[in-house]
Amino acid sequence: MRWFNRCIVGILPLFPKSFVWIFSRRYVAGKTLADGVEKARSLNAEGCLVTIDVLGEDISRLDEAEQAKRECMAVLDAIRNEKINGNLSIKLSQLGLKIDPEACYRNVREIVQKASEMGLFVRIDMEDASVTDATLAVYRRLRTEYKNVGAVIQACLKRSREDVQQLIREGIAHVRICKGIYDEPAAIAYKDKAAVREKYAELVRLMFESGSYAGVATHDKILVRRVLEHVKAKAVPNSHFEFQMLLGVTEKRRADLVARGYALRVYVPFGEHWYAYSMRRLKENPAMAGHIIKNLFIRN
Ligand code: FDA
Image (cartoon, rainbow, N blue to C red; front, side, top):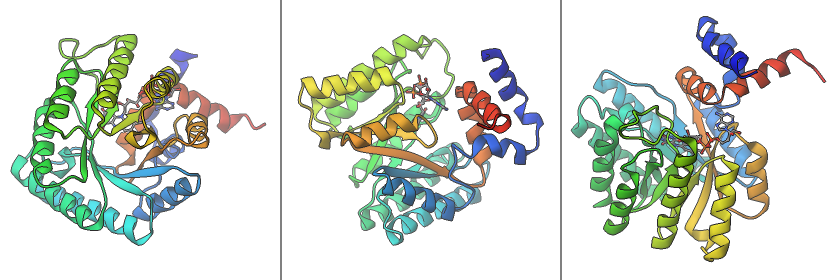
């Protein structure tokens, strides 16, 4: 079945986007901010927190970065006006990091400043390893002025233990820990699933031991169980961490954690650039394509 699912994902780009949308809509709130707000509202009603992300791919001009900034600002307005219990996630490449780091910094600073005035939080997603240093540099600079901003560390990168320890030493480890979605070379990244899981657990442990606020972003049931065991054994207060999951993924596990009283934040992406995002998600889990095909053709 695996090869079949991989084949489906492999040939999806040959189909019209309207067809691919059938596969994508579970991972994406929709194409407009109104879609994002509606999804955020329904997740809030289920007891989940949200983080809203304006989908965007690599840009090549600074006016596109300006546009992305305006869209992020609009999300902040919507969160406040619609009384959404949530925050904003941003990607620095979308805001100009690879074109002009200084212009990118100004864009992000404006967003974080506005969020700060509104009492809202901004998470800076982590992209591929070519921008890890630049992303952390922007984060450090922002933290000299603002507290309402956090970073992301990827457990698959060999450097990440040192990065987390350094952020802890600096007193700015407000970090989401994730496995890392980018396919990095073996020279800088663990390639073995079990090794990544071990590193993940280690990073979360470091965060907990330092008393830093951790975003535990994983759907991995073994990791969720290990984190909960650690929480229980070391009496980590619930106020020191939250689970985080992607929209459309392991919804039952999500509901279970919410029912048990844990904070759980759902990553809610929306926007015109839904296509590239959902292709990444489907490549990550080709089995999902198989399930969707089955649901399309087999009616119970
Ligand atoms: P793993 O990939 O082992 O998945 C565990 C189980 O979850 C699978 O067995 C399957 O059941 C289910 N699952 C996972 N992905 C699925 C999918 N697409 N469809 C259906 N089921 C799926 N990465 C990054 O590099 N930078 C970032 O900033 C972020 N940000 C981020 C925020 C949030 C809230 C989350 C949850 C994740 C990220 N990621 C990320 C992505 C992350 O690095 C990682 O690629 C995915 O979370 C998958 O890793 P898991 O830990 O879930 O384990």
